[in-house]
Length: 553
Ligand code: TTP
Ligand code: MG
Image (cartoon, rainbow, N blue to C red; front, top):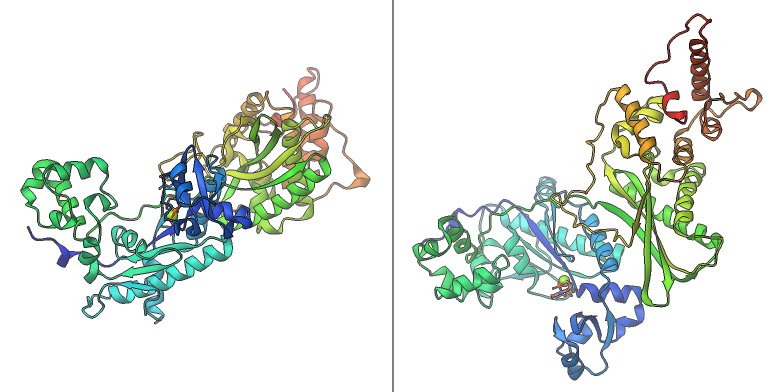
């Protein structure tokens, strides 16, 4: 059977990035002393990976500890069973790659495919340099003339930029492969390790495939499929290339047979599928001991400022803030992680650059954070924390409205629905539990961005929300803090304080901007008139009045 290599589409430019000795690099960044020693990452009785110094002793991935020590008696082992830091780093890498293209597909924790076709064509239009950088697989004398060599050349320059960026931003080295499809980019990337990159042009695709040591080494052929192929005598890539397609179709069905057959020639039509943005953006700082509230605050302010930079880079608006603490525990080396989260008002983030929040706004976020802290840690008793972390989750797309009152009251309802400021208690929930995938939906239903609802239904939602948050300590008080975040203008005139209507919560009322206080007061007056039978009925209270959800029910 003839392969379709002549009809193969070369239009795309795909980069595959694989971090070097990933878990080991994360540990070496945490403890730089480990950089100069042979380091193995231990899970149970296995070395799941090791740094490249250890690899010089012959240590391989998934080797038994006992065998590893035979090869390298001075091997230093670090436990790698808590994946938290690896996940965090993994998502930071993906987030960084998403700056280059919105087509980034995660594969495991340390690999990503990036379809950079769009930037490549933009650069081509500007007449950018097309000379490939890094390693080139195969012969370049007989190149295709469809323009793929220029595109892949630019792709290799972008890959180099990306790898430099990962190194500078995150302190991690990586390998990259550049090809016109996922299959070739992945295989090419593994040709030269560590900290290198390799481009493969379409004319060398078959040759690259033949370097693989058996069909089981073809990336998308798993154990079961490779056993099936072995059962009909197909063991090597060459066996697959020269097989009789009807024999293969009999085994796999015509469609799959064609797909597998094409793979042996380096043809892969599967597109890079965007894994979506991370569901959570967070940072954590571990420390030996934090046992005083001033230290807690200081650390959290630092974390918040750093986190706001990440959120600004991401561009979406978070709806939930989560605080994590790790409590020292004699019985557990890892300590005990606990988290608490609550929703925050989106309009804080709609006011422009979140990295430039005024001190006032920052203080208000800190009030919310410290409230969460008080739910996690009883500061009237001695405590010993070894980690503090903050993260934002439940993002929605940025959409900026202007009207202050609408922003203040309605906009957040439109996008946040009844789950607003619901306090959720969790224990040991990893920040990045679900993979960053468009198919991995958040367990909570996400309302669509800027979902329009009638104001009345919003208010009903709001009322329901107050009921639903009974488990939350003083939800209205929390709401106060959030409302304050939004009151960007009109500070109350101190000469003319408006007194709180008797049916309203004082704290809430005084936290409101003056215009809303006036509105509330006005409505209280009208209600009073309406409720006094011998008085003529005043203007009826609107069912969607602000009072309806500020007045405790
Ligand atoms: P790999 O990318 O296979 O390995 P690596 O990044 O450590 O090394 P390389 O430089 O060769 O790319 O896997 C990524 C991480 O996944 C690795 O650091 C440890 C973990 N891992 C396991 O937990 N179990 C396994 O069987 C393998 C292979 C890796
Ligand atoms: Mg790797």
